[in-house]
Length: 273
Ligand code: ATR
Figure 1 (cartoon, rainbow, N blue to C red):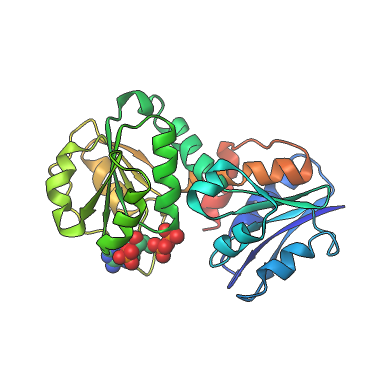
Figure 2 (figure 1 turned 60 degrees about the horizontal axis):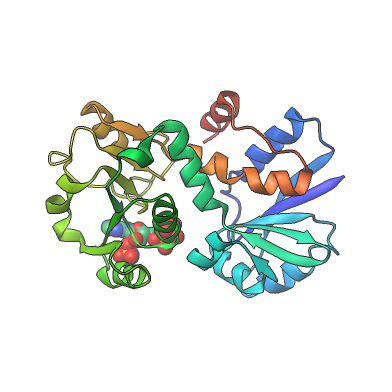
């Protein structure tokens, strides 16, 4: 039996066992995917012990993605850009890591808003945490000329922008309404709108009718931001697809089958969120 897992602290809320469990059954693979609570400080030891634990690899979630990055023998360019790893596998005893959040975000956008990359001259990204760092990298890698990055703590947006002079423009949170009219794509990467958090209180009046509105929050499935955008007639991109697509590279490495993100998988997750 091939085994993999997700490590985090805490790890009880993690949805990836639902996704990998669905695919293991779908493809008739003799495998298992579990959750492992790993304390902060214990990440390097856990990852170096993957083989001894009988694990082919693992996903890594909050707060361990940066510590995992520092433990890898080899990483992909997306992980380097973000400084964080969420998917790990063993290759001849070497620890290899990637950041599949970037590819998950882009693949989801490709599916839910086909052709977006031909239309977007300017993207407006809200938030400047780890998720925003990856999304900014992904958007630039697909040729978006300008990304405006608005964050409550401006210094964090400035720090990301410093790595991409000219292409990324930091923006103070209070100036958001002024910048809205320039955006062809709006992406929320903050926790605002998530169950238990305040909603994203941003009037969309100034947004171009052609703008695409995307949210990486997936609990609830349709955030208040997406509901308001849909009511105004915008194309919307929900966050669950990103979660599903980011799971693909790990499953393919560990279990040897490249799985498909299908409507019944989406429905399975939606019913269990
Ligand atoms: P992740 O790694 O998932 O991006 P994170 O690093 O905790 O998570 O980032 C969360 C983001 O949500 C940050 O941009 C945060 O803004 P700050 O950098 O100012 O903390 C943003 N955020 C959280 N609560 C917010 C609020 N009430 N108003 C505005 N932004 C908020």
